[in-house]
Image (cartoon, rainbow, N blue to C red; front, side, top):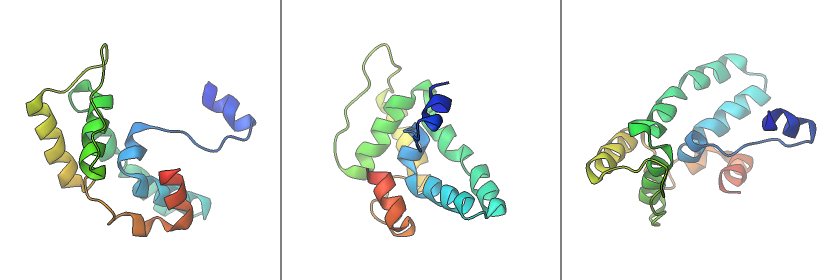
Length: 124
């Protein structure tokens, strides 16, 4: 409901876990939609599932995001605090293997595909 109210106030975005892990994918999806390339937008939307599945590994979305972002940014993003689910060390390693397979732990290589507007949105 908050999102709908926000749209009427001129808000144009949201912060969500999957886009924080793969902003380039979501920026490209939005650009395709904004350009009216609905076929491309639908294809990209179909590709969102892999990022959502990564976020929900072990039912610990906050800890998954902190783990992946720590690896990609080279900054310790910390651990989740109770009552949020936390990953075990073995689960963290498994999450990182899955994230590496999706290419979301790489730094820099994806920013080139965002364009100026996408880079600003992904970082701002």
